[in-house]
Length: 111
Image (cartoon, rainbow, N blue to C red; front, side, top):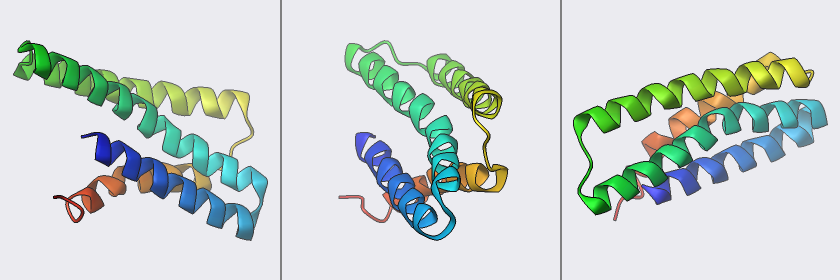
């Protein structure tokens, strides 16, 4: 699970660097904010799920409540990013998309 989070972080940083090179700093920061909107709640979810799985307290309800909190946290982070920074929406949604799709590439690196 942690490999997925690291892969998401790497993908976001690579895309932000490329966008920053081509389009500028504002767009690169927007990509980072969009990626962080998914990465941060996902990383917290992975830590929480790992802790409950190790103690034997994991259940279906824990998973679904965690997913709900992850979605709500993502929406809150996107809203706060828009409120406190002049985001470029297309770049921010691009960062969010990259973070979401990095999960698919985790299957290719599965050992």
